[in-house]
Image 1 (spheres, rainbow, N blue to C red):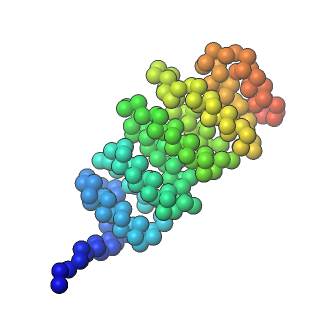
Image 2: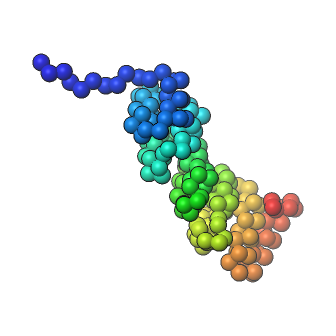
Image 3: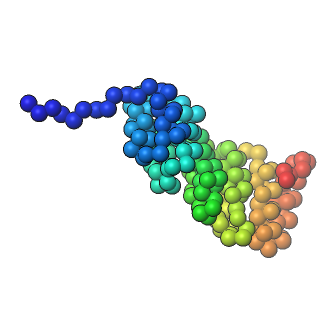
Length: 187
């Protein structure tokens, strides 16, 4: 009788950690990822090492991140924020800020009241290349105004974005809204 395809035995956690951080072969990393998922390892710190592995390409990070967010939906916000940060830090030389923005938007959809996705998205703006486009950032941050409970920082950021766009009236409007709280807007 022919033997059916054998499943790979589960890897020990330390081997998974080692592969996530230093393996260069996609297959090795993928096997470690599959082993971690099969064992239901729900340790965001372990997966962060995976995202920082410099041998992974953008599409591979997306593959792992999307699968991880689907398998552990309670970690989706952290996964998306981490992916956005990786795209911003590691792939900025490739002008890949649009991937960063996309994952900040996904993080905001998972946790709409958190101000960080909106603010961090603004931080990845490259004025020389206008990426992500200022208009897109403005629309994203404005969506956050209706969701984030304490939106002083978002108003302050909108003021700066409108100033960059050359719209002094809206820049002043949002600056005043930020000042209404009696606290200085963040710099």
